[in-house]
Image (cartoon, rainbow, N blue to C red; front, top):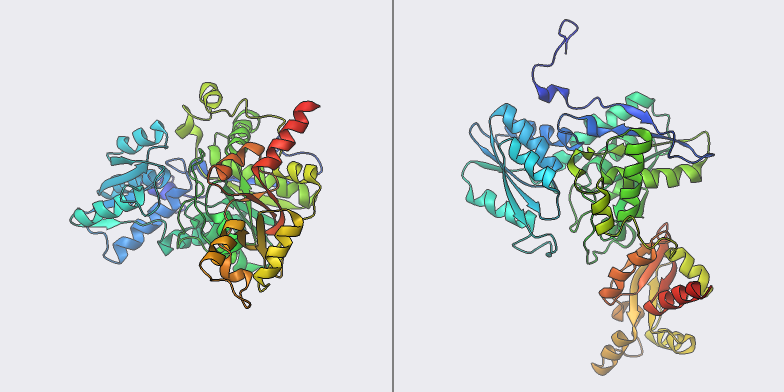
Length: 461
């Protein structure tokens, strides 16, 4: 607005300029200050309004989106709402694909803007024709005069947050903060804000948040893709690698589980009066963890990506929380870190470049069947099972000069020290051991028998 104007010309002009608010009740004493960027106060209720508006404008400038055209996109809901609002103002048709785990509120909100919604199954591989991304690509190809937004791989996604979200945070604080924390879905917010900050200073830590079951955390630490599995929290995490995720500006990734996300989100609504979604809870959970490590006199900033209006029938519903096991979630069972303390065993592993013969001897003398492989920084880069060596022996692939690098395969099931015991079950169901890491470094390995012994011992007390 100019000085003379007291109104916006349309709702799109109201995107951005969201408030930065201090958390008071949910942050423990002797912690750093935690500030939250209230992105749920954007017009459609999410941070995605920024990206949607920017991408549409750029597409128009490049001639990719023309009058009378159709916007097609795969969305978990929030990007679709930003696009649907933009399309309503600018006069475009919209078709969106969504996984079936998304809330009814999101689907109905999209339809209220006049958008068409195609629902696809959640638990399918990323390259499946039924996956919501692949479905959107097919619809875009089949629809004349259409523009496929492609938020996961569109560099304008990162650009939107660099020129708006990042710039705003810097202006609001003068750069006087110590860490920026946010979840990675497409990666646009984390990457864009991270790029802006890194252009100004290297002293501020950029920290990503990833739900257990997503691929970002494992890829950041190992540069290898792992098999994702389903989680409940929406708008955070991903089952594919995205070009809108710039790992080079991220200093660290932390994991959260569904219960941590939903529990903190409920606290934010009820104790801080912040009407935000489940991913906000995940961001704040990790921001508080960082704040406790940094201590008083420091400042941590995080993002509240979307509004709780999308989740009235989900995490804000006691019955939904009970039905999904979150209000009675294995309280007292402990964490992966607790199990490692219980085991009291030295971490047994081998390094890349070591002969397979050494690994065989180590497995024999230690009585183990699974052996992690680490690099010179103690970062897990592979894992060897007895069956891997057996197969190599029977096919005569192992000789005098064979190294562990030749028989290991990529590590699966990376988990943080703070993962709950029942977060390990999905890893075991896929016949993987849980590889416990902290700050990317190997801390131990947990098998089914370790959990059985841990729980049995606790039950005997």
